[in-house]
Image (cartoon, rainbow, N blue to C red; front, side):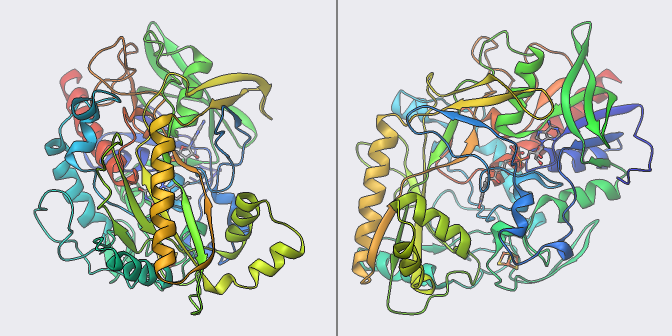
Length: 514
Ligand SMILES: Cc1cc2nc3c(=O)[nH]c(=O)nc-3n(C[C@H](O)[C@H](O)[C@H](O)COP(=O)(O)OP(=O)(O)OC[C@H]3O[C@@H](n4cnc5c(N)ncnc54)[C@H](O)[C@@H]3O)c2cc1C
Ligand code: SF4
C-alpha cells in the first residue's frame, strides 16, 4: 500500500504477517467478500528488483536480533526466516512434499511426541488445490505416501549437478529417489491476479529470491489474488502490540512511516511466524491460560553433508530443490524419520557454512573454495520432538523499538542426536560411493516451529484445531507456531493447507455471527 494512501477502516479481519500462513488465508477471505487487510513488517520485493547477489538480497531475511540459548543454539539472522511481502516464501527453496498420514500421529505410533488434532484426509483436498494453484512441478508417479487424486500440474524440473550425483549414489545402495515436488514452474502459467509467471530459468538463486516469478512465493500467487479481490496490504508496518477490550481482540498497534498507528478489526489473525507470534502474545500476556505460549519450540534435524568430485558441477546453477528420497521415513530405533534432499548452494553461503562447520579460515579457506564449482551437498530434514526444555521467552534486552528481544532455548534430545548420526553416516557413505573427497558435515537445525500449538484441550494447547485461540475471542493464529509436532517433511505446503482450512472455518464463523 502506498504510504500516501489512507489506512483501511471497518475491517472484518486483520492479518498480521503475509508468509505461508497469512497469505492463502488473506486471499480466501477477500474472495469470500470480507473486508480484510494485512500488516507486514517487511516491504515489497518485486521480482524485477531481485538481484543475483546473495549479499544484496540479505534484506529478504528477518535480521532483528533473536537471542539463542541451550546446548544446540539456533543461529538466527540470514537464512532463518523472512521479512517482506511474502514472508519466508520469498527465500524458500520451494520443496513442497506433502506430510504423510503417519506424520500426524506420532504419539499414537510411538507413545511420545504429539498427534495432530486433525486427519490427513482433512488436509488432502487442500494439498490438491494448492499443488494446482501454485503450479507445483513434480514426477508423474511420486513413490511415497497415499495415491494422489491428480498428477502434478507440471513435469519435473531438470536436476542440477548435486541431484544427478545423489541419484547415482542412492542407486548404488538400492535407495529410491525421485524428482522432488517443487513449487517452481517447469512451464509458464497464468496466475490469477498476477499475470504470467515464467518458466524457471535454472538461475539457482532461489534462496536469494526469484527474479522471474517462477517460484511460487506468496507475493506472486496468493497475495496478488488477495489484492485483486480488494484486500489491502500495508507493508513496512511492524506490529508492536495487540489490543484487547473486554476480553476480545480489537486490533493491533504498529509502527508505520515512523509513527505509531492503530488498526481496528472484528477478528485478528496472527501469522507472524513461530518466533514473532509467541513474542507478541507474551508481550501482551495474551491467550496463555495454558502456559503453552512459547513452549515446545522445534527445529527440524537438518544435517548437511558436502563433498567435492572431479566433474565440474557448478552448484550455483539449476533449481536447488531437485531430488528427494523418503526411503528413510521410518527407521528402526528412531521416533519418526527423515528425508534426503539434494542441494544447490550459492558461493557466499557455501563459504560461510564451510568456515562455520569446519572452523577453517584464511589461506586454508581460500584453498578449499578454489574447488567450489566441484562441490555437491545432500541435506536431511528430520523429525524434532517437542520438549519442555525448548522454549521461547522474552529477554531483558530491549530491541531498537524498546521491546524485549526474544530468547530461544534449544537443545536436541536423544532422538535428534541419533537421527543426526544416522543421517550423517548414510550421506557420507553415499558421497563415498561416487568418489567424493574432502567430505564434511554441518550438523544443523532448520525451520522455526511450535510455540503456540494447536489441540483440542485448552489446558495443553493455545489454539483449537482450526487455529481459534482457546481463551481470547476474536483471535486466530495461522503460522508455523501452531504445529504440534514438526513433521518429517518441509513445512510450507502443510502451512498453506492449514491456512486455507483456517480461512474456511473463519468465514463460516463470521457468517454465523453476522
Ligand atoms: C532458507 C529457507 C529455506 C526454506 N525452504 C523451504 C522449502 O524448500 N520448503 C518448505 O516447505 N519450507 C521451506 N522453508 C520454511 C518455510 O519458508 C516456512 O515454514 C514458512 O514460510 C513459514 O510460514 P509462516 O507463515 O509461519 O512464517 P513466514 O513465512 O516467515 O511469515 C511471517 C511473516 O510475518 C511478518 N511479521 C513478523 N512479525 C511481524 C510483526 N510484528 N508485524 C508485522 N509483520 C510481522 C514477517 O515479516 C513475515 O513476512 C524454508 C525456510 C528457510 C529459512
Ligand atoms: S532456480 Fe528457478 S525458481 Fe529458483 S530463483 Fe531461479 S528461476 Fe526462480
